[in-house]
Length: 599
Image 1: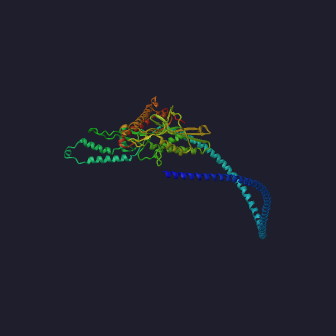
Image 2: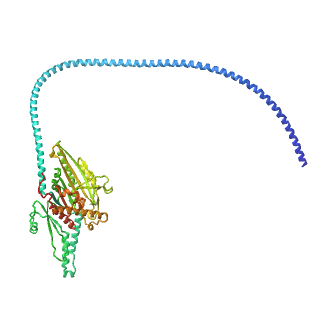
Image 3: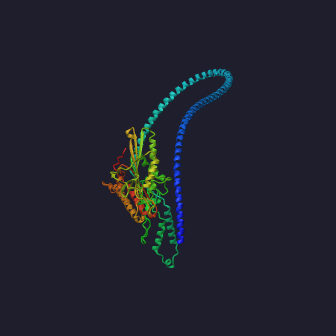
C-alpha cells in the first residue's frame, strides 16, 4: 500500500508540474492574444476607412450611371415613338393603297356595268317607243271604256238609290215586326199563364221507375222457390188429405212472386170499364189513371179481398218512359219561370225511388235541372239578340239537413267542412250566396260541387241515400227599356230526401237521427198539403224549415209541379202507396180559388 501511495504521490507531483507548465503557456498565449487583438483592431480601422472611401466613390459612380441611364432611356423612348409613328404611317399608307386599288377596281366594274346599262337602256328606249305607241292606242280604248263605265255608274247609282229606299222600307218593316213580335210574345206569355192556371197551379206527375237488377233477381228467386214448393212431391198422408191452408199459402206465394201492385189502365180498357162501374166514371179524360192493388196475403183461409185503388193525375210515367218524356211534360213550367213567374218543382218519394235521377240524371240521360238550365240560357241568348234586353241569371243552392238550412255554395260547407247555418226570414234565407252565371257550363260545375258537398250516405234501402233536402234556385231577371218588358222569374227545383222506415233501412245512430228529421219534415209537408186541400185558414208552414221555405210555392201564385216517384216492386208497396196518396192529396189543392187569372 505504501508503494501505491508513493506511486500516486509521484504521479501527483508530476501532474502539478505539468499543470504549472500549462499555466505558463496559457499566460504566454494570453499575452500573444492581446497583442494580436490590438493589431487586428488597427487593421479593421484601416479597412473601415477604406470602405467608407470606396462607398463614397460607388455612390458617385451610381449617380453618374443613373443620369446616363435616364438619358439613354429618353433617347430610346424618342426612337420608339418615332418608330411607332413611322409604322402607323406605313400601315395607313398601305391601307390607303389597298382602298385606292379597290376603288379603281370598283370604278372599273362600274364602268363595265354602266356600259352594259347604256346598251340595255338603248334597247329599252327602242322598246319604250314601241310601248308608248301601244299605250297611246290603249288610252284611246280606255277612254271609250271610261265613257261606258261612267254611263254604267250612273245606272248603278240610280239602282243603289232604289235599293237604299228598299232597305229603309225593310228596316222600317223589321222594327214594326219586332214590335209585333214583342206584342205577340206578351200575348203568348199571358195565354201560357192562363193555360197553366186552367191546368192547375199545382200539377202532379207520378213516375214509376223500372225494376232494378237486384229486384229482378229477387223476383226470379222467389218465383223459382214458389214453383219448387208447388211441384214438390207430397207424402202419402198429404196426398190423401190435402191441407186447404197449405194449398192457399202455396198459391199466395206463387202469385206474390209475380204480383205487380201498380198497373196502368187505358181509357178503353175492358178491365178499366169494370172498375168504372165500381169506382165511378173517369173524373177527367185529360188526366191519366194509375191503379194500386193490395198484394195478396194469408188471411187464415179466408178469401183474398183483392182491394184496388184508382188515382188520376196530370201525367203518369211508366217504367219505359224516358227522361225526355218527363222533360216534355215539365217544360211549360220552365217557360213560365222565363216569362217572369215563380215556379217550383219538387220530387217526392221513398229513398231509392229515382228522385235524384229524375231531377239531375247523368251525362247520357240528363234530368230536369240540366235541361232547365239549358233552356234558360237559350232563352237568355235569344232575348239578348235584341239590344233592348239585358238578362241576368243568378243561382243559389241550399240544403236542409236535420232542420238546419245550409248554403252549399259556401266553401266551408260540406260533409267534411264546417256546418254553416243560415237564418230563415219569411220565405227566404238570410246572407246566403247568390252566384251570377253567364253560361250553362258554370251552372253544371256549381251542381257538381253541390253534389259533392251534399250529405249522402249508404243505408240498406239505398247505397247512395240523400240525407238532406236540396233546393236549387235560378233567378231570371229581364231588364228592358220598356217597363212592361221588365220581369223577374224564379225557378226553384227541390230534391227531397227520401222517406224511409227505420226497420227497413236499418238506420241507427246518426242515420236514425237524420231519418227522423227527414220523416218529420215530409210529414209537415203532407200536413200542409192536407190543410190546403181542406181549404183551412191556418196552414202550418212553420212546422218545418222545408215548408217555410216553400211557403209561397205551396200557398201563393206560384206554378208548382210535384213529381212523385215510386217503385213498382211488391216489397215497396206500402211506401209507393203512401207516395201516391200524397200525390192524390196534392192534386186536389187549388191555389187560386177565386179564379181571378193574372194577366
